[in-house]
Length: 351
Image (cartoon, rainbow, N blue to C red; front, side, top):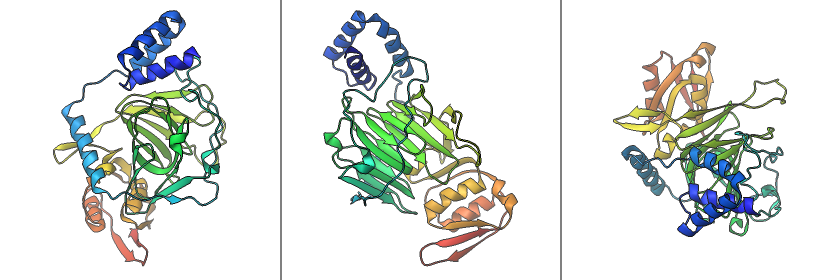
């Protein structure tokens, strides 16, 4: 179908992979079908090709250096159990562009990922981060307390699919013929060739998708006719509904530009600082920050005074021990702590 071919060619153009022959073919198709030209122009305007500045180049080099220092983890075959439900809602375009669909470029009906025979799970335990190379050559870095599920036969599929619980940074191998799809309980992300971060921990009040370079399309559960297209250096945040609310109604979300956090004469993004082995946070409540500290240092936190949970904190830790981090935070807000060591981890009591 000509629409499918136009979208294939447009996607390769956006990803910077289109050959001169494919660009000419795209031009010919849009001439024969001028009703598609407006759609193509709007899509193209969403992804201007920004020049790579020195900060971007340095950030990417830091990412790659950090990845190279991590040992690669061998995936374990998954046990036969249900992971989480697939999102059942169909999704179309936020921008009301009509019948956009990147998910069905020649896609065959395939069994859900959890029901396939050759799937693998990789876990990053608390206090550790893990690097994995997928069968298609894509590289994934898992943050502490996260899980990745993928199909060992993804190279045989028309769509490359994975599931994430927790936080992961992806550098996806380009393949415009076979989109890359990430499922989380709150987000469904369609990718070409790109680098981005996904954060979807079950115990947090929000989920995030952060685009570093390339292009991604995000679908929200339960919302028909809605797709969100991110530009580089943008993030999408979805906020969970308060407990007790009924599930009807649209998800509350926002799209915002990334703002670097100055750290030791360099700029670090809070959303991806962990890839450089930095725990970064900006204007975060003490209560929310302790969830990240628990995963980072493999400890548990308890508050004896409720008012301490609302302290707001900004900072970055690179190689600090747990006690060094706590003492640094005490310089911002006064509190006391005690650490009780246990065989598997430890308990930090804030009072």
